[in-house]
Length: 326
Ligand code: GLV
Ligand code: GLV
Image (cartoon, rainbow, N blue to C red; front, side, top):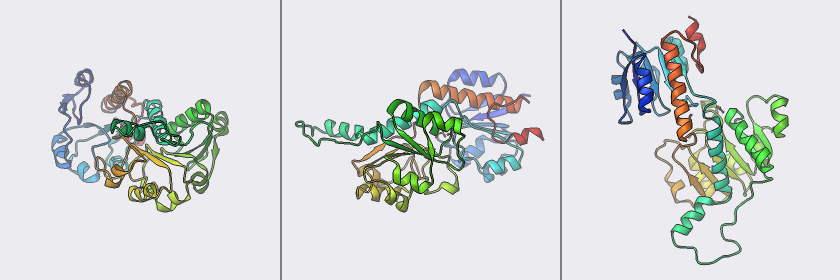
């Protein structure tokens, strides 16, 4: 009989139809957020899990769901999945790199510009009826063109943001990454690898795109914020937890940096209450990859992986291919 799978969240009906050609599909088209125990209950007897960045796949869940052979997330980040625990149990895991790179870079750039040029702050001001007349200093921001763009985490998305900055806005690009990029990637962007301290001190606009791991927990905290320019902006499209949000609130309040734009938060969907009260924050609900076309491409790629893993094919973006060679 056909393997059973759970599609843990809403997907387009056409995709459910496609999955139903291969699997017995249980779906959650109502798109309720499943609690850990509901997720375990729904995964009983399932060989595959189609999930998002919201569903946590840890060792306790895996022990309670011994039939699982595939965990396919429609996200590039997979810090919600215990990859080592999956690998140890012979469970293949996939994510969705590449298909979201350009949309996510567009949004990261938009957030950075919104922080620098006070776009959302200005709009709140106007909507609140506070606009009475032109003044010299009204909503003066900091320039983006020609400024120094600092990128923390120079993966595919970081490079796509660097391209926008260097080629479109004449920005000087510096970056910090565990490994240095090859000269053929650096040269066309004029990108320069720097240590973290230099990145913090020289960036006019610092954008965080580093994949989350415990090693980068609170990589931007009070000490790091203190090294940044008072005119600098900080944009986080990586993950909550890369920034110490409490320290960020203090820094923004004291105007130790000019502004922050955040798409991800520690403990989201809750956020540090101090962020909401500050004028110099741009706050969005984890939507950097959210365009119709890109969400469809992510879901399709997650499905391609799931089908390939459970039917003996070659999954395009599996994270632990060693599991399939056993
Ligand atoms: C979203 O945050 C993703 O990792 O794709
Ligand atoms: C992921 O880490 C990416 O930058 O694509």
